[in-house]
Image (cartoon, rainbow, N blue to C red; front, side, top):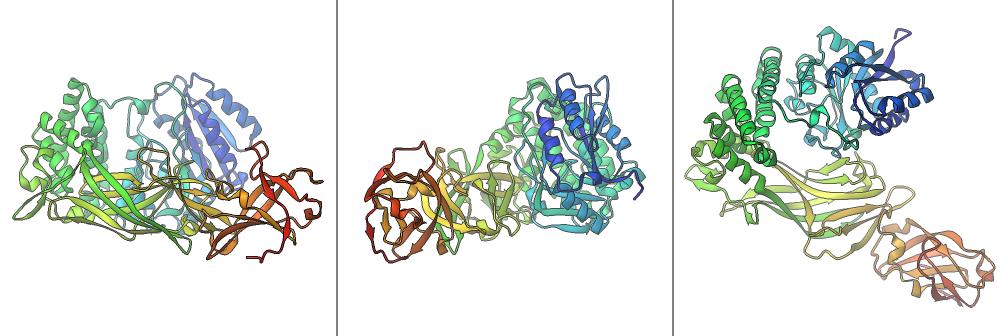
Length: 617
């Protein structure tokens, strides 16, 4: 490696980022990759707030790590700042991060290691779900190495630029961000990179990049509505890349992806219903003209049923039909119920029943002699062939039960045990038994302390929906605790305070302390100085290897209040907490008071401290 080269350059375009940019920089300073192996290049696009001052102060604390560049006047988009950062980057690889996002501490080291070991032109790190961007999670279920777009066409589903690129690869192929008022510049760069890359890797066992919701007020370029004609021109440039640079065998799939998401996606849901009438008509006209010129009939006909029906309405220029489609499409919800919940050998076993619903009623498919169809009211006036479910609808079927960390949006899921059926009435039902193992949830490792929401997610016929798991009997914690990791950490399932209550996991007593479930009035001390407290509401954890912190306060005792570690022990009769007080038991009075929890909590409760022989559990 040349003496002035580093392994990675992280390029950050910045405009009025406020305090968010410091969160981003702090996450980079905390990287496990040695600071002499990477650099951070912040390119300020003419900010008018305190962002430059904040970055300068941070740079003075890390002069060898952070460099800055400034563009004035502002270019108005992330493209030019990224190009400026690329031009001055010294890294063998370059990573493009947004100023309001963060990276996991091991992110750069892991992606770099994968990139070097596979001579990758691109490395995709797993992305969190915490921000406003949609994430195509099926892509991050398995790590990949030495792949191309021809090998894995679904790579194109990840169009964001938060990736590790080999810098010489970008230079050799002239891959740069299109400057000017270009809204989907990251997708253009990714499309060109996918088309040319000869080795692509995916890191699936670590959430590398965390989307954050911007805290800074004011309008950013990405917040503005698309200009219909300009947006169509941008999509045309990407379709040029698909047609002229990508392998012929993947062109229909990739073109279908841009048609479904970037064109039809602008014409459905709440956004479509909220457009100004003149703007909506202009957007429909621009998307119709582009689809007519660039989207072939085979590409359209290969779409799943929902987007295929919408595509026919667009082809006809049927504004009212598209509005009807948007209303019905937006009304479709997934309703999921946990009908059974149990812990078996530290694994949460969930029996799940779910269905797709249109408002308050079940969504019902229509039927003719050739099979199932989407209801005509979804796309009025379309032929049955445009609404018929076929092989493409079931080929893309994807069902999973996801655990999502409430603190940062990282998502880990289980795809086994679920099935989808269309019953005789035309209702779409999902069911099965899912097993969630907290001790192996995160790529085979225990999940972190915190609250984890459970959601069922379904992708079928071009429709993607997710739902919290609700239950019929949703009152308080589920009462069963398990132990994960070493030393043991407690995990329980509980029902949230939402309406209706939803199922979640509490890891590490984040919100539901074990101490709240013990019967303080049952406490007694054996003649060997062993404090024992019954825990009748707790049916675990197995093995008695979970420690819980207790604050003990005895009146008239020589010892002051003290923190002690207790251990849960279990048997067929129930659970108890045991705390060894042999070193202070001689000083304990015959009767006393004990408080469990932090000092300053609820008033202590009177317990017996008489010495008696109790057989240890």
